[in-house]
Amino acid sequence: MELTEAKVDSKIRVKKERSIKKVRIIERIATYALLVGLSIVFIFPFLWLLGTSVKPESEALTFPPTILPKEWKFSNYQDVFTMVSFGKYYWNSIIVTLMTVVGTVVSSTIVAYGFARIKAKGSNFWFILLLATMMLPPQVTMIPVYMIFSKLGWVNTFLPLIVPHFFGSAYFIFLLRQFFKTIPKELEESAYLDGCSTFGIFWRIILPLSVPAVITVALLSFMWAWNDFLGPLIYLNDDSMYTLALGILQFKGALIISWGPMMAASVLIILPLIILFFVGQKYFIQGIATTGGKG
Image 1: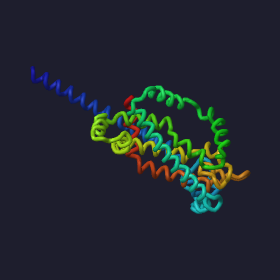
Image 2: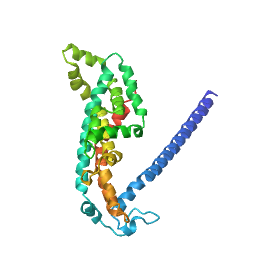
Image 3: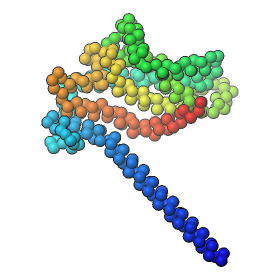
Image 4: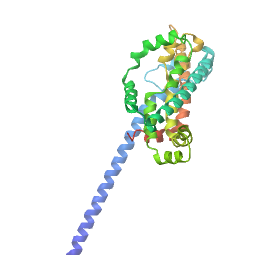
């Protein structure tokens, strides 16, 4: 009798395990199918962009849209540099973006370290006030900020696009502060006992341990500055000062839009972002995952 019950229990357990395996296989298949479907939806515009960049004008806007052209026209990439001053726009974007990244990283790390490690009267109030600035839409401060830069004579220069980033960014300060607070205080106290100064601790201990967060800030700052359209549109008037986001409009004439060269220019514009993302992907994910987890 006992043997019979044991066999029954064993059969029931085997059935349950098979049932669980089937459910897991179905869940896995459904998950992969969903991911593949979403990947196709999200990657199709990018593939269309790549295909259109080597299409003749007659095929650029065909419906339904196609990815591969019937006639390949690689000269669109050559036309990018002959139709407009694309090389100049590229150089302008590099200058503005690199200076923006340097200013953002330097100022945000220093301010974030102060909020995370230095206890001062009213520091929590100032930090909350800093966070409150993120609630302000940029359109609210656009006109007064423009008037200030206009009085300073900075309009039609790169200064309005670069200088504000040397005063920190509320979002990046918050991001870095959260990461700095995860670093054990014992390291800092040991360094103090060894005679290290506050800046020495920041430079020799905190920063080397915060590489993922700093790289995340640098990548996000690079992406936002590289793609910024509104800033150059407001402050730059001279064609020779245009950045890529503004310069790409030069392919749009009064009556005709050069779709092939415009798409080729778009590919060249997003190329640095794709390369940077794949190079810094590991640090980017690690930085995002390890910030914001501690208040």
